[in-house]
Length: 499
Image 1 (cartoon, rainbow, N blue to C red):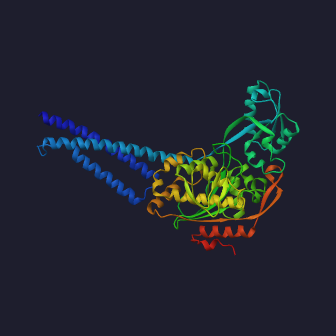
Image 2 (image 1 turned 60 degrees about the vertical axis):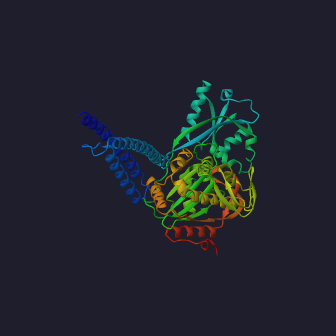
Image 3 (image 1 turned 180 degrees about the horizontal axis):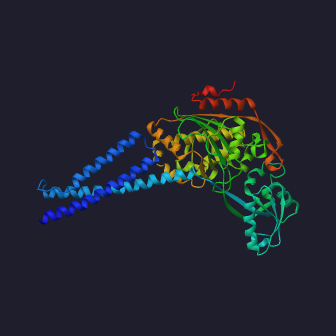
């Protein structure tokens, strides 16, 4: 009787433990299925394995009656089964948390609808003001190009600090307020820092950082509007715009687009065509109703403006975008363990030297490699080619089996520095396809070229700066290559040759 009671009690506890095992396995399978990255065959095998393990644990846990097991043998098996059940539960909980985190991270980077605006207060380099409180009685200049809501937030904070209304003067553009500060017409300016990325390339402003200094800054979060992707949620061919921003902020912010690369992707053939467009390309700026401007300046009016400009240049609708700032780029390179690139000649990149041949680069070295142009014979054209080399190397790293399991940590490290409009289900399908076939991707690169000159730029109020006039035959060839990839054709290296 006593043994029967003990047996009944043990079987009750065993049933509870088995219930927890079933629940933990069910939650893990639910999140894996929701993520939709595991191929159907793999998911089926995993499900079958979970069911089989649960049945085996059940047989070991449930205490048999009528002396079918020897006492010692039965007790030992039950203890082992109990330990294995606890380990399995712990593993399922950890796995569920990891998969749920990956799902949340992918959802976060594909649903970013906010951007950071950095407004800074500048005074002349020799001005005695060091802090905001030192500017009591100053006259501040604002530009009409600064969003009214952003400027109002900055003014409200100024008035709070000053304890009185602030004297302001409005000018048409950000460059007009800088001119006013140079001329002594105002004491300080409130400047959208995104314009700083283009100042150095304009005539008359190259030494701005030697003539003014910032004494205060405001980081303002605002909504962004980007048109819905034109692609359906599948893994057919698609066109991706990759935008890189060399903003000083760690978080994503509007500003000049320093990297402009189109990626025509054919997932079935596992081929990617990268097309680089120099940042100084002289194109139609959609925000200026088609007025001519540098391509990089289009980014001052947001990512959608860049998308429209690039789409208009090549005559293809862009399906998705991926945007990363240079801080995020450096973080990403480190997160994947660095990349290996090959160069045909050695050159100095910032404080580093890139040797001829193979170079394994960490994030800091890769960023210097991506930024360098002055040491390159082809200048901005060669820089664009080097940037495509880095993207190709990244694709190789990210498609490796050793990194597929670490996507959650990689994406999580880029929080606030990377965003994309690629739907989560498309990302999941691409990963699923890679898990089915772990072969590498064929990455081809093409760069359009042009002739340098000086011309008027709309985004900076008609100011003159260095531009690159497009070689139309190169643009036409790039457009044709993109079209062929999007039509499902597999290209060869010979196809890149311009006749």
